[in-house]
Structures are given as structure tokens and as C-alpha cells.
Length: 457
Ligand code: 5AD
Ligand code: SF4
Image 1 (cartoon, rainbow, N blue to C red):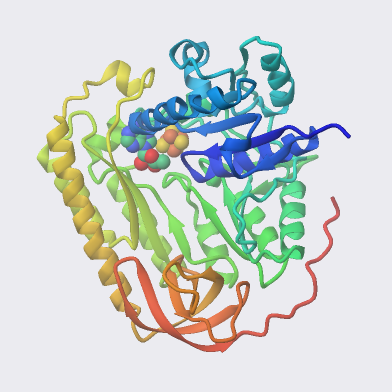
Image 2: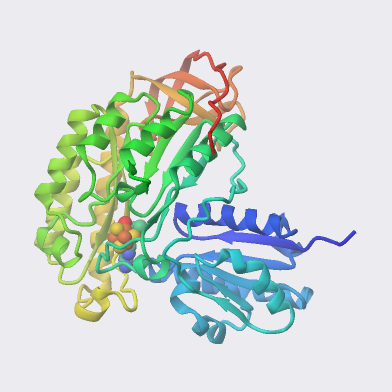
């Protein structure tokens, strides 16, 4: 029997990249490769990369230099860079990082096996062609994150928003949506395998759109269809763009129990001056109106955000606008970053990256401290409340405790007793930290339900 070649996949960056790695794993299995968990035994190492900030790229470059050492042990080892850095840097990466044998962009994964063969013949291999159609809709991802309870489903690819700071429209290409039938089938399949939560992924899910012979599916309709797979299947989604988040969507979330009450709505800045320069296409007032709509249609909904600090021309007063919008919304959670100028973006071409590094750091520190406080206060408000928690596995600290999340995406830890992962457990919160709710299990929700309906696809 032919010995299977072994592939090790390492992933950096956003959820979309982790989802893509699962597609890559599936494609490699179809080509007769074995997926392994130790880079030391690999014939091929694939590094799925992120370009969104310079630091992310530097981390990958450091890792590539480390991986080079594996080649002394196995001279036949091939190292591939896939994903956003592959797309952004193309051949340049082959010149700059000697350890790299192949470069494959996010729309060229079907070509991976042929490119590895080419690399095995001693040639450098590259495919960075972007597609307007590829959605990998027929590929059943191999679930690499093995909790067996939560999974990502990619529903669209690319982005055409061209926020001026962002490299994604260049690395992931045109926006395209995936056939809804294949999305539903994937959700049904996951449910039948014991999964209890899916997160629908795209750079801007609110502009999801599918038209088949005049029958149109918009995002809120897709969300309802996935939620209809089974009441015991929770549905989440990311990421929303404030300019596109509609009342219809919020109403759908509000009325459907298993569509989670958590919205990630990146604000980026609280200042209209900065938002305009970022080409975000909304104002502070528009954003706050959307927050009011969320609060109206989904009482108690958790709201999280992304913030960039120190964008071009940001003065103290603009920074204060960000501080004040954080307080006004009182975010439950936030991802916060210093602005990192990216080559070829509009901001790099037209604007001056004029906020000194030390000021960026100081402002970042300030918003991180504020968010820590807001998150802690939000958690403290939950003490005494009872939530339905989907158990995902053991808590990090002890096997006597389980961890899960409530609908609002907050991590909840509670004594294991006789509960198991995959159970929905009612937990009364008795204590908290800024990051975690701690509680006692009240009772288990009956977990036996008919299997998910069969998909027509
Ligand atoms: N610098 C810093 N942060 C960035 N993001 C995107 N591009 C940049 C950049 N050039 C952040 C945004 C986005 C998140 C995924 O990454 O906040 O929402
Ligand atoms: Fe980047 Fe803006 Fe697209 Fe998000 S919406 S991926 S920040 S261009």
C-alpha cells in the first residue's frame, strides 16, 4: 500500500482562517493525504496566514524561520504559505523566506495537491489567482477544533467595503455568497454528528445574498433557515457591518430562541472625522441608532466590537469620542488594536500615519483598561441571574468543572456533577471575573430531540 503523505496545518488570524484550514484539510484528505498534529512528522507543513496587521505577519515570518530547522531533519519536507500573506506578498515571499516552497492564495486551495507535486519536483510553486465564484460550497470541512460541540460554517467570502486601513479586500477578493442549500446541509450534518452550535462566518454577513431563479435569500432568511434545522442547534454569526445591519435581522434574532443574543458590531472609532477617513460609511449617530435598535428588538443582547486606536490624524478629541462611545454602548467585550499601516491600502497611499507609536500605545492601554472595567461591570450585573448554558467541555482549571457559553456568548463555569458536554444546563450565576461567570447548575434541559430534518441537497 502506498504510504500516505502527512500534512500539518498551522493557522493564524481570524475565524475565517480557521474555517479555511478545515476546508484545506478536507481537500488534502480527498487527495490521499493524512492530517497530523505534530509538525515534526510532516512531509508538508502548511501555514495559514494573516496580513491584517504587521505584527501578525512578523509572527508568521518568525515561525517560518523556526520551521526551516525541520528541513535539516527531513530534507524532503515542503513548507507552504497559504491565506492572506500568500495573496499579499506572492513571489516576494519566496525570495524573502528561503524555507518556503509553495505559495497558495485563499481561492486556490483546490490546486494545493498539484502545487505540492510541483514543489516535490524541485520547483517553487505558486497560485494566487483570486476568484469571483469560489466558495468551496461542495467541500465538507474536516473539524480540526475537536470539542465536537461548536463549529464554524463559512457562508461567504471576500469583502468589497474597502475600509481605508484594511488589507482584506486585496487578500480575499470580491464578495461572493455561498449556495444556501449547501449551508443548510452542512448545519444538518453537524447537528446529526452531535454539534450543538454553529457560527456563520463572513467578512460582512449582512450583505449575504443568493438568487436562484428569482428566489432570493437574504441574510436574515438564511439565519432563520439554519435556526429551523433544530431548536437544539444554536446559531451565531460574525461579522456584521454597522451600515448594513437591518431591523429585519434584529427582529429575527429577537423572536427565535436558538439564534444567539450576541452581536459583534465593529465600531472602529467613535469619531465622525475618523470614521469618514476610514471609509466606514456610517456616522457615530447612525451607529448609536443601530445600538438602540438592537436594544429594542433583542433585550439583553450582548454587544461586542472592534476598535482601532491611533488611526491617521487621530487627535486627543477623536480618541475621547472613542472613549465616550465605549461608555455609551457599554460593550460586553471588545477587540482593540493599534493602527498598523498596511501596504497598498488607501490609507497608506493617501494618509499620513502620523500618530506616534508611544501615543498609540498609551491610547490602547487606556481603552483596554476601560473595556476591562466595562466587561467586569457587565458580568457583575449577571450575578443572581440564571442562564441556559451549552456545555462545551472541561474548564481550563479543573476537570471538576465544565465550561460553556450562554446565548450572550459569555463564558460560564459550573461544577460538572453529572452533566456532559453538549448538554444545555441552566446555571445560576453566583460570582464572576472580568472574563468569566461562575455559577451553580440548576437543572438540565431535556436534550433528547428528534434528529434534524433531512436536507434536500
Ligand atoms: N490596523 C489595525 N487594526 C486593523 N484591523 C483591520 N485592519 C487593521 C489595521 N490596518 C482590525 C479592525 C477589524 C479587525 C478584524 O482588525 O478592527 O475589524
Ligand atoms: Fe476590512 Fe472593512 Fe472589509 Fe472588515 S468590512 S474586512 S474592516 S474592508
